[in-house]
Amino acid sequence: MINITDKCIELKIEDDILIARKIARQEMADIGFGSADQTRMATAISELTRNVIKYAGHGVCHIVTESSSEEIRIKVEIEDYGPGIEDIDKAMEDGYTTGGGLGAGLPGAKRLVNDFSIESSPGYTKINLEMSRPNV
Image: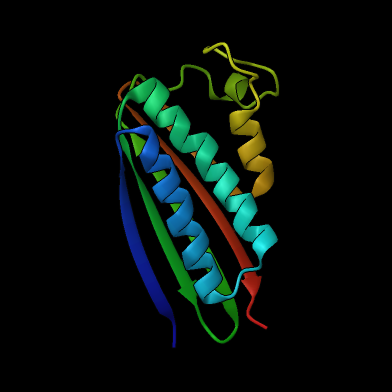
């Protein structure tokens, strides 16, 4: 039997970043992820949802957890309808920034999770994050 939870957080203001982080951590704890994995995912969510509010103004964060007797998994999808990322390859380079930051957000988030994908075009960006572990 597979247990699935699905949460959706609208991203409009800075406080929504904290709500997304908190929900992800709690959902991960509920299915058995340890605190280090919870922190890694929460940090990635913070970086990416902050980008949504800063560059797009609003968006959505979907958090789905799955647990079975064999595996636990969290999938996070962050979407916005902002200007899009002009050059994804460049945006994934450490130190590259268009907003005056450190240029560590996207590549740093990728390093924190097991699976990362990004698609973007003018008017739409979607980033998927995933972590999974054997259920022991």
